Length: 150
Image (cartoon, rainbow, N blue to C red; front, top):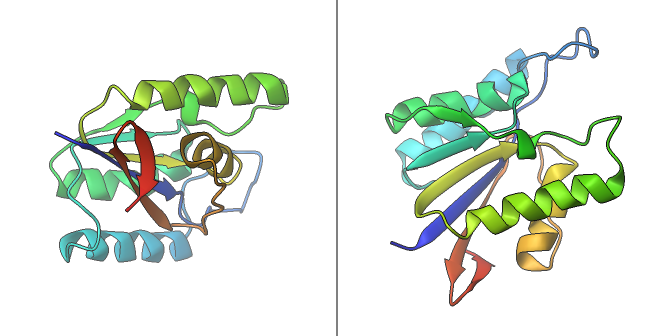
């Protein structure tokens, strides 16, 4: 089975207290409902795995999609945003390790991450950087040994 990847940037974050690991806001909840509708109407494919950053806003974004596909969400620490204590080099190294692990997966894999991770990850996978808006999805396919947009 060919591997497809659906990269989702987390929905709008509850910013009441930015120092906390907040979940999504009311606006974010509406954005997630739009993603669910896209999945229900076939604009997004049914997922076989759901990998998320450990942050609550990412889990909150992906869980309704996973539930619709009767799957659970798996926390993937390599999808976390760059940590204050992490150098740029270590951050990129972490994303390289994750991108290499993707090649061994099969089916439709959803990942949910952050505005700093996604451009770097897409640069690694596609040699082109994509900066997604909140709750936006980008679909990729692994064809002939490389990732391409689908």
